[in-house]
Amino acid sequence: MKRYFLLLFCAASLYANAQTRPVDIILNEFRKKPGHVMVAAHRAAHSKYPENSLAAVKEAINQGIDIAEIDVRATKDSVLVIMHDATILRTTGQKGKVSDYTYAELQKFPLLFNGKPTAEKIPTFDEVLKLAKDKILIDIDFKADEDYAMGKTIDAIVAHKMEDQVLFFLYDHKDAAKVRAINPKIPIMPRVHNVDETYEALAMGDQGGKFPVLHVDDSFYNDTTMMRVLKKGTRVWINALGKYDKMEEKQADSGFDQLRKDAQYANVIQTDHPEKLLAYLRKKGLHK
Image (cartoon, rainbow, N blue to C red; front, side, top):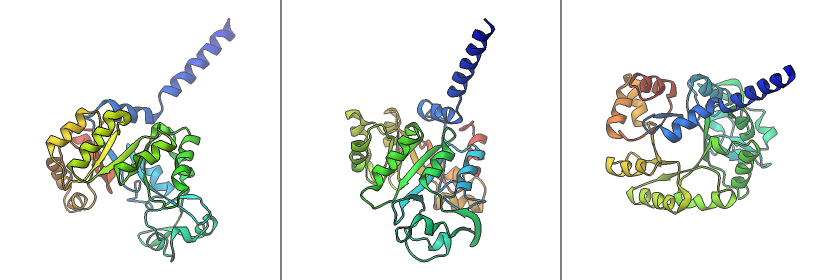
């Protein structure tokens, strides 16, 4: 009898742990609480660490950020790595493109922070997935040009059983068919560049392929259209990058206040200052 209760207790503990992943809280808010404004860390949380580094992703997790945005490219020997630019000059001080080097060759170059070498190296996509699993959502800014790269990226997501933890960012909503042809379970976030494209993307959702979130440019944002998006159960993603982040750097809260005035229905905000945005949203009662 004691053994029975011990087994029952262990099973209950395992079940409870399976239900309380940190990312489950984020997913619940993402899917069911549109009034909860989510924070996306552009190139992860890089105020103290090199952008797109494992340390920056870990920092985003530690800060309680909802989403870490990363950029995926491919090396000469077909390894998926995390790097924003096509070249490695800005981030490592070395010449050439990511695709000019093998992964082993890239590992010889430390990532720079404020122009100085660090202990961080260019991470693989696989390493980022391992680090992020069960902890944070990952926005994949897919930048690889190679024909095989999209399939390989999706295969890695599936291998780590992280289909529910990613957003596959596309610059054109019409490219969604390419992703869905490989795996229809991968959540897609397309960028829409005007009102017409916004409604086209919503129409695709009506046909059974709803996008969980649309990346909207502030150049055409309007409340009427965004209310339609939210009513469809789709989130509105907008960038604080550039204009609003620069305002924030000059005067605390000024940039985020202005963004909220300009785009009040946006409920995912991407920024280079995720820790500041998180504190701002909590102060306003828009984030736990």
